[in-house]
Image 1 (cartoon, rainbow, N blue to C red):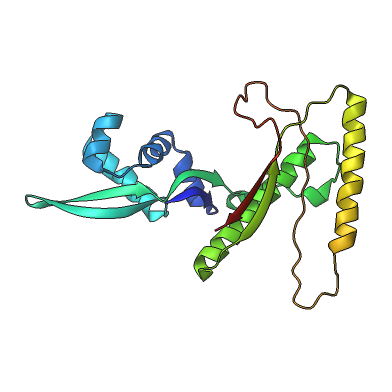
Image 2: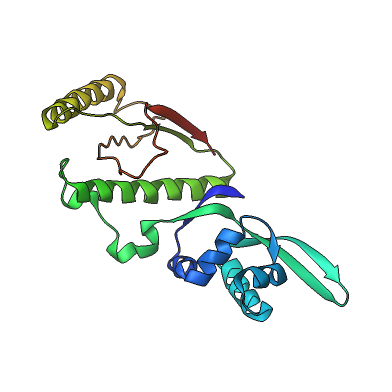
Length: 208
């Protein structure tokens, strides 16, 4: 089971957004049979089994084992990931395009960038899984408290200059075998109810 699964197919997104199937997916973070799930969600086993077959058909759940019970075979399933994110690829006709209206001060442009990040990272994960290869990633996540809007603007200017200097130093347009990497830096107000947000920047690197 993956920690995060990426839903890229429109049909799978529709299935996952159904309230009952979403509830079943959450319960299937641990292996369950249709019988045990039926008790938890207060539905007939046949109805739960229908939902499970639909989820399995879209690759959202997988078979863990089969158990013989008398003349019956009980199938035990679990979700293919502990949590899921729906990629903009699933809504290809209306997915946002950051190139359409680039504005570093626009929250909606930031959202478009984030959507593209989900889309491209999801496609990298899917492709790497099929090829049996890792994806090397790097991320920074932290909180900074500004005393004033002027300080925030000054921070943004210095950060822009620092990133531009790094890109200028390491970017090699003609490097043989080189590979382009997307660089995204974002600043936005923290949500007031986010008690788990780190107080200092953390560095996360993934090889998966």
